[in-house]
Length: 366
Image (tube, rainbow, N blue to C red):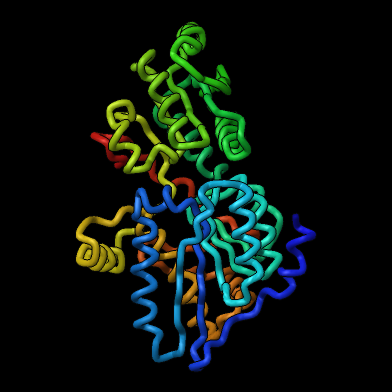
């Protein structure tokens, strides 16, 4: 497939100059559209940023365009669309919200074509360990999340922990970091479980957990619906065990359905928002525009678009190579929600001690 795509990639990497002298910063969003629009917060933040940027930079000859390219969550369609984006000389940067197994392939394809690629919802940690200057992660790594979950476990005084994970790469990255962070503490992982498929199958697992004195279970599950199904099975059989989950559980549309079984569980936040006048002003503008409060993903959508465009405007250059270099600036970028800084490989710089742990109360993680 890559051999067939390569000739098209050789045409990529240029920046489109419009006939009226304006420079176009074109930012496609690769995602499963049904999933993206079901929540709506992220894309609302993106659209708001695009509107404001086109007003702010009109007199500097910069036009910003963003649009969703729907891959329907499929591998073949996701790779096909990414190949088209990679070959399009008008594309400046890409917001990649694809399935992680898709983005593992398309990240290299897009970066090889000289496109700035941002992952606002994350990707496999391994992508950011190879020194690729075009790849940037917008949230803490899975290793960061595992460390934060371990810190919470130790602070809460849990000594005997069971780990449920479904064996995919991102979950392995998280639980490995989790156990490594516990090594010098009194807390220990006493059981690993890789499959919980039904209440009847869970009976023997739960009996083992009770015999082992399990106080808390760490859940790392790929896929939103499967994650809540497993949580429901655990909670119905054992309401006393504490549940510490990965951030996949923090989705407003799913919590509206599963809020009773999610009550009391704890997850790490994927964004550390810093209260400021900038953030307060953003919230006010957002409420005026959409009629409801912005959540963290609305802030994320807004900030990642502005990150690209404001960097281009600061540099006075709109080509992807210059923008990618600018994103690695040691000073970072001050968004409305936080200061955004990247490590050399594109991973987000994160202070684990400041990563909040959120508890679900009445269908909302706070």
